[in-house]
Length: 565
Image (cartoon, rainbow, N blue to C red; front, side, top):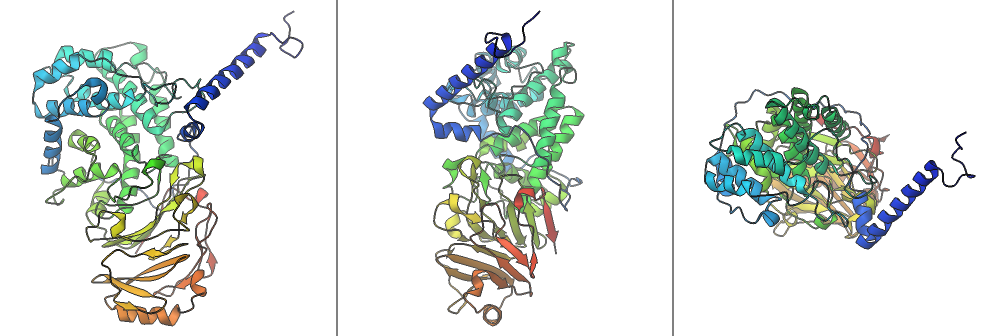
């Protein structure tokens, strides 16, 4: 009789397997300890292994497309020409970002094709796919694969551009992953650490597209059939999970750009089902950008990385590069479109067939109406809140949810059509103190902002009307910003008016009690807004509207609630 695996048989296979797992886990712990405990914790926090769907909300993401788009613009031509003239450089040091883009641009512009193909034929993979960490310092090769896939699909059947020998080198050597077994975990973590969204999409998107290219070009091997090997099902689950729950790495600096280019690859070259799923997620992300920006500038909260917490540029994200390039392709787009940065991301807009939905494109060119939007990011996340309209945007700075949350809270900002490019040029408020980890900067409602710290007024701004409690600034011909500021409280109320004296008189009549301003404001249209600037970091700062309690638990907010006037 075979003995049972219990305490009387300490050497049974089940018990040995248990001890092997324990020993393996201890080995990882020791390795992580050598790597640095804080770094390890933050890396473990950088991925989400499961997606908890959120309610979709009351607003349908725009998807209709009817606008005519140009094939190229002065800006996209500049981007391609710039990369085509970029030195190819050393593969080991330039192969992650610059060299693959320089190769793509040379082929797109038909420049130096002999040199480009010769260079490609000489290369080997400089690393492995998956995140880099202490025991896997040679990771991140998926960045390269995601940039090589477009070369294969765009020029793999054009032997005069991508020479057959160079194509075979790219396909068989530089895109090493095939088959259906997804690399879901960070390499050399014994399957304990899920990899991050951008790595999963770049790695498995590239594997999927290599399989697809081979299947479309004659391979009848089961491992190249993405339906038979299960990879398409896995990839669709990943993409649809992101759409249902929102990105974990939302507004990520710098990783959102790599998530976007991986999705653009799939939207361009995937099966009909994969193209549709990728397009829907891209539409959602691009609409979120449109309502959270003004003039292609924005300053939202983001997840990853803490070292970017001090970035004050209004063009510091990577998404803006695609938006600038896309809007330049509109017939009524900006006549002198400029790229604020991230041209390594912008090159995807130069060749990818994806185009923005009509409404998203129109909002990027100019906000047509007043609106208020709440974007949920799920359990232990930070919401995004925006109150905007023609020529202005109040953008909430969000909230940190503890060290492991990787959430960077930022000041609440007022963006105007004034050409500002840095936080220092904006009216903004945050608090308490100067450490974003202690902030709850979710205090934004319709044309109202409040925080547990003072209002910072840009140099050169002068109030048009003042009292002891209020300063009124004329922001534009038809918009005033009323400011109440003290060391532990900031209140900003936007009022459509060209008469700051009249605005001040109304404020003085209805909001003249300094103590009452600590917790409530009567707006210019008669709404009573109550708030708690020192709210716990899991609750919305706004508490009541017209004495009615609001839903403050933003962990359960839907993906998008939005009202327009």
